[in-house]
Amino acid sequence: MSEFLGLAPPQNNHPTSSSSASASPPPVPGSSSTSGLVSSTSPSGPAPPPAPPGTHSPDLTSSRLRPHRTRLPSTVLPNPLLIPSSPSSPPIPPNKTILQSFEWYLPHVPSRPHWRLLTSLLPSLSTLGITSVWIPPACKAARPEGNGYDIYDLYDLGEFDQKGSRATKWGTKSELVTLGDVAAQNGVGLLFDAVLNHKAGADFVQEVVATRVDGADRRREVGGKEKIVAWTGYRFPGRGERYSNLKWGRQHFTGIDWDHGTRKKGVWRFEGKEWAGDVDEELGNYDYLMFADVDHKHPDVRRDLFNWAGWLSRQVKLGGMRIDAVKHYSFSFLRDFVRHIDKNVDRDWFLVGEYWREDSEFLARYIEFMDHRISLFDVQLVSNFSRLSLMFEKGDLRTVFDDALVVWKPDNAVTFVVNHDTAEGQSLETPVAPYFIPLAYALILLRANAGLPCVFWADLYGSFGQHPKPDHSNFVPPTSGGAVLPRLMLARRFWAYGSQYDYFDAPSCVGFTRLGHPSQSGGDGLAVVMTNGWEYASKRMFVGQHHAGEVWTDVLRWCPGRVVIDGDGWAEFPVTCRSVSVWVNCAAQNREFVDGYVFNTGIYRFQKTDEKDGRNAGEK
Image: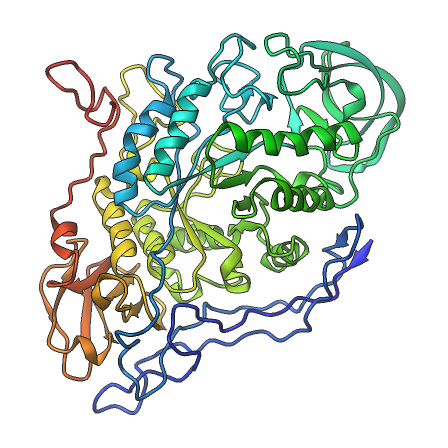
């Protein structure tokens, strides 16, 4: 294997600023300090060599940089320039935001398919500033109620009568196509959840010679060769050979976790097969995850998966892919797959991989090996949110970005607070205390140079919970009653632009400001203050002399009162206990719209019905 010897450290690059200078903001009048502005430092280290040629894959674990603790760089303007940019400055694009449009516990209701519900919601989602919608796996699952990660047939998008139904849990292919068309009309790109690591729900069993391996160390054999009966035969009787003529069999897989002959569980590696060498080293070698593990080295498999990507792009209008479980299959295969997409499918697709690992340095190496063409979810940041939230007032908010991927690769980090895997009862459960969720969303939605944020369906619309009841009595309402998160999203859409000042100067109260950009909402900015303490707090912060004399209020309506910006561009911004406040000019462009906006969280029929036909307003 080739070897990465180092990684370029986080750089103080600020694409939203009109200047790359790293000077401090103007001092507080009457003071010689910068009011506690955090000055960021970057770890040093050599730049990596280019990605190795050919099919060789890097050893991303063989060399380590020194452990470091760093914080997200400030985006600031040089003193004494106090206006973020002139009216003639080139316009900047609107902020982008992803919505994960499902949760694990959504019920299977064939009469009310999810694709139709999503289609009806697209105009309101676009209003909130959603630019991409990550949809659940749309391929046929092993059972009608399967969420799609138990994938059966990549080429069945709800078109063929297989595995007990024609539609998937989420709807039919025609409904999915309509969703893609309406999304494109609303300026929203669908992100297809691609499950390429394994297959489930085989049509018949096959005898296979295999060797059992240690579940805790997949490199270690715990028995000799034996014959097992494995579910590895796929004939796709409903689809036949339409779209693809590949009939999957034991030769297309490397292993399985169930011997149907003896009815025993375990992990078996098939004779003549080896686990991929360039996968995550957890459990010794984490190639095998679940079901029948796909052999990405097999030429039939590679050809079929590459063809599938092109076929998919012709079936549904897409904006990209979320690629599932990338730590469990060959890094070099995925790089080849991505290069195939760029060359033969659509190089404008946004691609994000799910690599669950808190080692951001390693993930940064992985991104570099992928030619920076793929983004990854920021696992460390979610871990930080969980840790700090459960420490309550003892948590040091200044450490919230410590070791986060967004510090290493801000242009390739997808930030989030909760997702379907980290929710209650799931395998990667990472609890974030309810009071902290709005604080976390403010951090990922409103900061500069802070990755691409992803909002979770359950935080916007509520969750059916780990143990749903027929009367929905345990339905979990959306975050903070459903009003706060939409306002944070609108604040991102309209005012989270321009240069940024950080005030991470106290463990229990931090803040930052965005000075605005003339091409977005006329240059109106915002100021954010948050605390995990039990006492009222405030932060004196600079918002730019061009805002002098303006009257600002909290768009979240959690902190009462008004703040007047002084002649030097400073003001004292308060926040109530264990809360966040987002301050914006009362006369800002789009402020009247945001103040009057009412977000409909009652999208399910049991929540709220129309007297005429019993339908919910969100269901068209």
